[in-house]
Image (cartoon, rainbow, N blue to C red; front, side):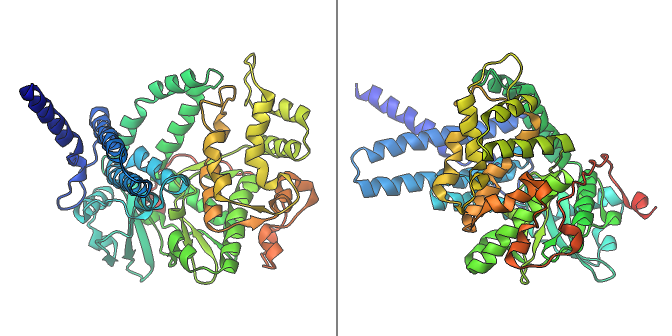
Length: 501
């Protein structure tokens, strides 16, 4: 009997060692490890992390059984911290789609303990970088010249490491200060490996929700992720946003330098300022309120006036400057809407504001939120859209609270939304729910958003941008709410020869 107990104990210890030992992806020697690029390798890394998480959860349950409430709380916090730290390291090393998921989790999951969210927040700016020698090789292969010929100075340590590439400060030979974004070698293959399972993802979505056009949803996600790998397209996106907002006193887009851009390199103006978390710690209530209005005008004027949506609204993409302006960076994921969709969206919002369920139902069918010949529950749909429109539905101040932001997880639970289709135009638009809303919460946003949003929902009333409500003057060309839709750029990578021509 004792022999069987000993054997069982040895087996448990062996499994525990296999499960709890650090993964290969977590070990780093002379820089970050190479990105795993095959489906098998990436699935293995995730599977190992999940197995370790399950084992830790089992240990937590055992240790909590006889513990006091206070000790149980400490044990849970330690468990969440361990899982978050490992997830941060793993996602940071995997890069691509999984790191982007971690970035979304880091500022959207209000229910997560603060120390665990802080661990994940490292993915916004401080993910594991690649070695400088790798960066230099990418630049030399793309331009046929060494780094020191292209730049007067190039800092070896990165400013930031993100999901697709990392950013270094540099100085041009004419003295201009720039930042250079360099794409990770192998990240394209890694994302393609992640997306190779997209047919399975579509099948899973379809199994959960028979009324959804799962293939269209997955195709939209794939298109946006693959576009982020196209630095030529990102260059054009940034140039478009730069032209649209040029001359605005508080909305700033860094200038790009096409002659130093390539398939895997993007060079742009360096802009000094604070990142989001640092800004929130030191900003006054007045400065936070101004930031709320700047972010609001940039996002909703871009979408409603020009038909553009920068689909990656996470805190790492904003730089807060000392004079109150905000620099917007990272234009790899941009959604272009046609005028018809924007008009329908505004009409849908008016129906919600006016409690007009008949028009609401008609628009749901027109916009394919409800697909032909498929059942739907109008009350369920009404509740779903009322949540999203709650900040501006009624003419009164609305405060972004933790409870309201967290409610999104239950409202948007896919297992509960079995009679709602998600048209492709809504896929990345829903990033506002987990992105902008979480940022507004941290800024303490409390405004009459109904009055502010009348600029978009009732464009014929000719309301001014929200910044003007704070007494801030903006040039005349930013005032009218005239629709000027912009066409998406062709996918084109400009090398130095083409740019100079």
